[in-house]
Length: 441
Image (cartoon, rainbow, N blue to C red):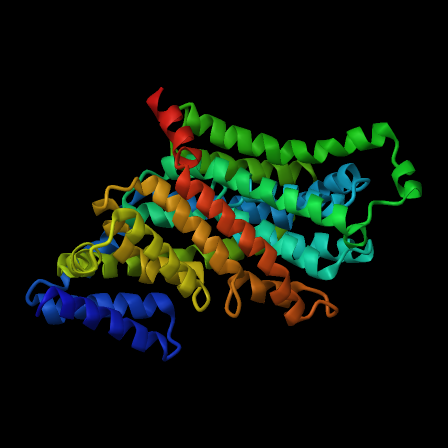
């Protein structure tokens, strides 16, 4: 069978089985294993088996459950609640200040979690009711929370970048550092949008009343700053030790997990229910990602081993005669189109094993490309009709926030993300400078 027919067979079989409603990882893993047996012949079964063993032996993957545990421990012990109160008081006097404080809180939550779901849970259950009570426009603030929570998959320690690093065979530390400035850039663009929007339409984000501002003395405001010390200390201890070479990646994740337990205990919130809920949620999320990684590696190894990747390279570079930048643009457009129907993990499993080798063959830096891919995933989180964050918000939002409100709220932020994607694509040092600087020393 030719390379073209192999590519068509595997991809069409995968899409057909996905339409049956089966779990994504099961479909991808089955297609990869079945193709290996049918097309490779004797010994083909060893390819998916080897992929499974690779996951079990990949030591850095231990960071995933440890970081997830750290994030859920801080959320379940209500340390995030204290953090939001601090931002509420300090940013409240400004037009749109509570929305700006929410974005800032999302950056902090992202830096101690690595997933969007934790940021969404904190924003929807803590920030959203307070913003609505203060008279903020429900459409704008719903978009703020959804966009802010998506930063969790770009700002280190991003779990999505761990998955990408496994598939692309790139150092996770480099990918994390590459996500720092793009994540801050995107957060800054969100804040600029809020400031301009609330300056033009002050009724969308009214400041706190003078009476409420005066109810907090300077001493009380300074005392509230202590709420930010714990998350900052955990992040500095975790990432500082790793970047300076004192600890490995896995050891840094263990430092973060232990620090979260100590912080919860110091605040008197390390109770049996908190510990039970944290462990249960960590187990569920970790198992899901382990299955996804296994399926992606199985499919990618078979797809590449059978030569199907060569047919894609020949299509783009030979038959269509495209330049490398044109191919890159086409790949990102494909990701954006799939984001309308699939979430980020499904895209990672289905398309990344096809496009990542192609990006490497074209001479692109795979660390930089990982940042572009992750931003595209962020857009997929928010893109109707099947954006992951849209449904999370619908499940957590109060009744007055309807599904049409949620859909309308994301379009300005999707536009901002597209602008950020274009900026980083045109100026790669935004993503590549920090890892190059740290690891060249």
